[in-house]
Length: 292
Image 1 (tube, rainbow, N blue to C red):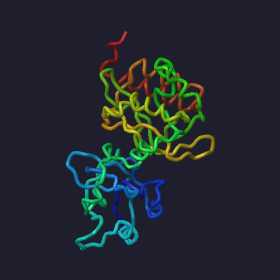
Image 2: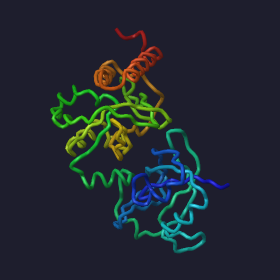
Image 3: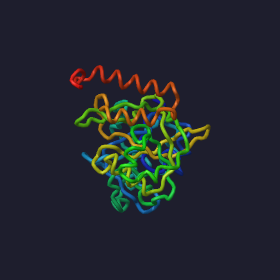
């Protein structure tokens, strides 16, 4: 077999300093995870050890076996050597499309396990540590509308709108189950999602973390590439449901926010797609016919 799967979680990730080593590989999933515990080594890169119940987030690539010469050198790994900095092991890797087996580099030295990264994401960890003054944010659901911003008295954070944007490789679906049915999500399935691109201060991010239930395990902050007015914006903040369920119709108040925020701002074709999707899900809902 000439090609194998590799999960990366640190400096080999997209737009990180060592990603050039994977430029000839093929990205299979930007949103992938494995069971493990992630740590900041204090040396400018993370380390991971095995775990049965915690998760580490990263990306999945298909790489040629010849590429492992450079990758192994980076990770200070020599097959069969006992004192490797990292070991290359095979693990189950989970994506929005399902699970498969692949390689991951894990720590072979306890002194690399300096500081736990509790949320299991190196990019998110550095973002929260650095607290950048200027943040790009992609809204694809109810945050396209400003009604709840005004009610929460945070609408002044959301005044700088760059424009509409597109997220390639993802579809917008209603995969977060709540007591009153579904909430919006992006799923990495090869589709396309339109939304609104904002420029925010970091204080607005703190509000979004609360609104999206980040600390409660509802939505996970992710960093994606967004095209807007012919420009590709890299590492844009958005949110991705942790535990996806079967798609459910959104409640009326939530659907109204999405459609109000999208109308006249996203493409006409995409707006009709949003309307059609909501109508179709409502017709299939077990609550259909029970609403007044």
